[in-house]
Length: 207
Image 1 (cartoon, rainbow, N blue to C red):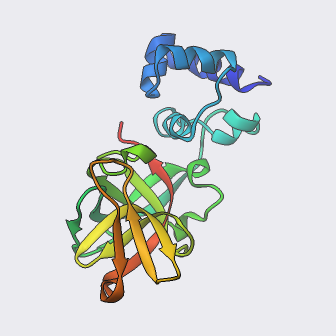
Image 2 (spheres, rainbow, N blue to C red):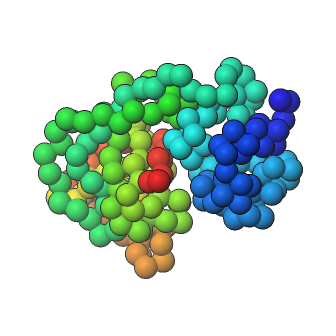
Image 3 (cartoon, rainbow, N blue to C red):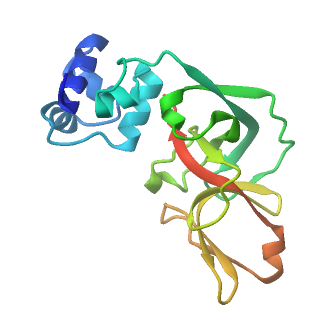
């Protein structure tokens, strides 16, 4: 199988689902599924995540034709019991890392799994970034600089937001991906209560 559309069609037939059912399982319309099957449209990150999490697809194989079609290796990511709010904030609880999230290695590549953590999301403020209530975000605690989407602590709340850093005057903007939640600018003494936990590197959608 030389092309992405050939590999998509292989997976659809292997699943035992109709073309429509397979497309819906990936969260796309019949028309988008048709485009994928014909090579008109390439799989988005959200589609790739679902191919990996639902069908255990090796993403290196799907994108590049390298290796076997299905993942044989799973890695364990530390899962925080605390939910991070994609909304107005949730109280921070004890971050006891008593659970792990098992994921295909290709889903977190090129990162080392021992350097990553996961937390479930509650709320709808980041739906414009395709982060939904009940999803798990994977974040890298060692990456805390530069604009991007982060897990962060503010006062007694754990949040997932797009973060913009401004030097003059020194401030941090927390930006939602939902018009129902206006941006919030953190300045002055309030910055002392802000801690960037880590940059979000991928999101695992709830099935």
